[in-house]
Length: 296
Image (cartoon, rainbow, N blue to C red; front, side, top):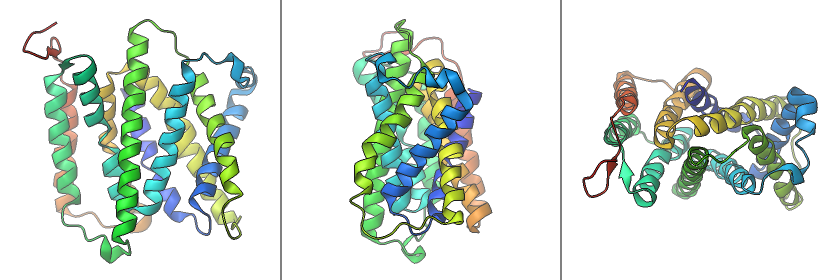
């Protein structure tokens, strides 16, 4: 569970790094994000990582999982690029709604505490962002709509990834989190490379941008990606993604610290409500409720 909280906190820094980068297209930002994370993985894991760089060593089942996370990072970065940090983080935090629906549709069951906890946490998030005037911050309606669509897509991909990985582990399928992590980064670097040549204008490769690209790759990509894999293998996917609902709160607090976006009493109350919902979702239940009222 600690991995899940750390993952959510580190992912919250994504918007801050993206907003600080200047003079680079979104594709350059995403590609730089993957490249830095990949290099970091090779350096830290050393020979162990090199043994896993050959795609033939990956099990076939790990490719779709890695591709999901690669696309998640692409959509999430686009969302933070176009929409306000708080809006993008809120929509990406809807992942537990999708995991709940997946369990309900595919497994015909749900956990009552998880459902109640999600509803309370979501109510807290809505209350947190209620009444904010993003147009006054310079965001157009079109940008907010584009960013919102990308955010919802990222939430769906994260939910499907967590549910699929958790389900396979519980079915006794051997899944290697390190392999998925490395393959996610390799796919990001290779698949996005052609798009870089289609970007007009020059890229500002300044010390300022390099510092924040490095932070985006290390702090907001490599580490939370590995933690997300480990958490998805060990935690119920709905609970893992409900814990992920702390991301928009952490993102807003970081925006307060680094972007001078003040948090008032209204925001504090909303944070308490959201955290209460997360704790409600963690309360154990005897057995999941089966659709139709029966219990397993």
